[in-house]
Image (cartoon, rainbow, N blue to C red):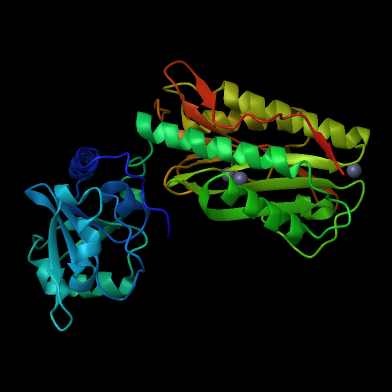
Amino acid sequence: MTGRTPARFTAADYRARMERAVRAAADAGLAGLLVAPGPDLVWLTGYAPPAVTERLTLLVLTPDRDPVLVVPALEAPDAAEAVGAPALTLRDWTDGKDPYAATAALLDTGKRFGVSDNAWALHLLRLQRAVPDSSYASLTEALPMLRAVKDAAELELMAAAGAAADATYEEIRKVPFAGRRESEVGADLADLLRRFGHSQVDFTIVASGPNGANPHHEVGDRVIEHGDMIVLDFGGLKDGYGSDTSRTVHVGEPTDEERRVHDLVREAQEAGFRAVRPGVACQEIDRAARAVIADAGYGEYFIHRTGHGIGVTTHEPPYMIEGEEQPLVPGMCFSVEPGVYLPGRFGVRIEDIVTVTEDGGRRLNDTTREMVMVD
Ligand code: ZN
Ligand code: ZN
Ligand code: ZN
């Protein structure tokens, strides 16, 4: 985890987020939230410890007292500099003391708490022993929409991350593909993302020819050949907010079938995007994109959900998947990324991040979705 949330957020922003989190927890029947270092802690406080160690760092949010950050004494000066620190009480502990007992003193017994997904089992098990009859729920399962709706400043950062990913695509189109390994093009993508301001690169997928038919393929040693379709899918964090875009390019002139499948995925992506508006269930985005592909007879080759949320991480709720009835709310950001994967042959995926507006959707990626021919 790198990339502190930039200083454009104020302590008041973080205070408001923590208050909102406490209210949401109470609505979900939780007596409080316990937040370990990771994306939730960054989002709630602006604090990311320089390294995550076995020493307990834990944000304790309960309705009856101000937020408390339990932090190792040697890291307290760093925590005190976090933008959200004025909205917190820091409770530092020194080696040899029991931070679990100190944390337990902040919590009622016999209650249920939400715990950030990335909390270490080591810490949670010790805490469970220190707080009699306590039980715990995954924060993401209990409050999946906590970070989903972005405010204006967050949307600006999301748009900037999207623009940086788009700039990366415009540059990668110019590099030679044929005769180079996927891993070399992947390294180019990572360099470009950093050059355009990303502090963290989460993935650089270069899936050429038959590798494109495997949506999980990242990069390999395969040497790209003339005639290959190539799925490019890349993203990471810029100023603490995520990018994630896919385009499928072709080395030289495509065949009619390659063109047809690419057009189909482009239509499906467009249909998914057009379905975005407030109040529509997430599953409707999946259905809209999937119907286009199914109607053309390729339904069995679209083998993943249509999209996922994005924010301070590159994969998070809400998910655009059949069965997800969560209605869309202005400010939500997520991918619309249908694909067709023909085993042993090639794949096509087209992906934009989309944000929900008052009357529809707005793409945060806007490079051409037409098939681009590369060298
Ligand atoms: Zn081809
Ligand atoms: Zn992607
Ligand atoms: Zn994605």
